[in-house]
Amino acid sequence: MTENNLDYTKEQILESSDFRLINKDLAPTSKGQRTWGTYNYTALWIGMAHCIPTYMLASGLIAAGMDWKQALFTVLLGNLIILIPMLLNSYAGTKYGLPFPVLCRSCFGVLGSNVPAILRAVVACGWFGIQTWIGGQALNILMISAYPPWAHFIVGPWVSFFAFWLLNMMIIWKGMSSVRYFEGWAAPFVLFATIGLLIWAVIKAHGFGPILSSPGKLTHFNDFFKVFVPSLTGMIGYWSTLSLNMPDFTRYSKGQEDQMLGQILGLPTTMTFFAGLGVMITSATVVIYGKPIWDPIMLLSKFHNPLVILISLFSIAVATLSVNVAANVVSPSFDFSNLWPQKINFVIGGTITGIIGIVMMPWKLMSSYGTYIFGWLVGYSGILGPVAGILIADFWVVRKRVLTVPDLYRMEGEYRFQRGFHLKGILALFLGIAGALVGLLVPSLHFLYDYAWFVGFGISFLSYIILVKKTDSKRDLFPLQA
Image (tube, rainbow, N blue to C red):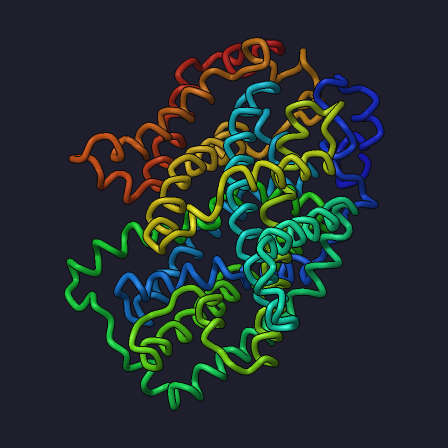
């Protein structure tokens, strides 16, 4: 037995693998690369949760009519639910040191894995664009506050936008180690800066009393439930991306306990806490301005103290940069690399992500809280939920947590299936997506869309198990070993 209690080393995998399926970024992590401890994962989640889209996620619920208790309950429940598939998929990444697209090869085939990987990558590109747009806006207002003539510079907003884009790229170009160091530094800074904004809101609203007593519009259960269901799906959809590709991070963990404890401490607690700040501040705007202001940048535009503006906008820029690098570039970098390992490495994959994120016109995705939560978040949850269902069914139910890692990198190995594609896995995927999104086309079935993640996950989970186990012979599961 060798490193990580497995009977192979990274060097052996690199030497024995098909060159079309591997590069140094996709290969299993070595013992020397496993340096992430509990704090690193906690800090990672603090950095990813403490961002403007999280703030707007919670503040959007207030704008949709919920009171602060309803909004916080929705956020907390959604994060506790999504934590379950996240930990289940993270386990496989830690055990075998594999990234998400390589883990997909066991259930979709060595070539078919590109289907879920690209679906995940496209969503990440959209998120990258959203975060870059927000960060660019903050940077532009920051420039105006520091140098007022900047407001008259016609291309100023675009200069700020691409300057922020370049900051993201610089971190990625330095590799995964820079991500760990940056997250460890940014997490506590963003936390303290955001608390400062809450203090302002409480003082301006004359205490917590007026904020907490601010009533919501959804006073009847039926009215609340109609908003609650798609909102809960949106909460789950928010991190359904990371529920798939957390193995991209947990493959660097020192052990299972480190990544599990770090995520349990980091995700539901910090996500709910930061969402709570957004809820409180947005509730305060109802008291202060007579209407909810769900966009924090719009709120900051009403400030008159230059020092407050500078500190707040700098915090937004750091928070946005922190989550964008970790959540929206790392995963698609590996996903694109999986397409063409010999030509696309981590850095090139990250650059591709940055370019596509701009092309997707993120300003339209953030045009309103309805488009953001009920359109973007709920919509893509119906695409990624089925992928999560299949990954968990394959690893935990069908294969009983056992993978033949060398064959994940061989064209003629156990996971070749039908010329590199596991048609049953791909069929189960599209059955789940169809079930989750059919409500968009058939009005009478729109309730399925409100539950998009749950519907897609459940259909794909069950259909994959049924399709794979329909034929009990070993030849059906592992055709090249029978």
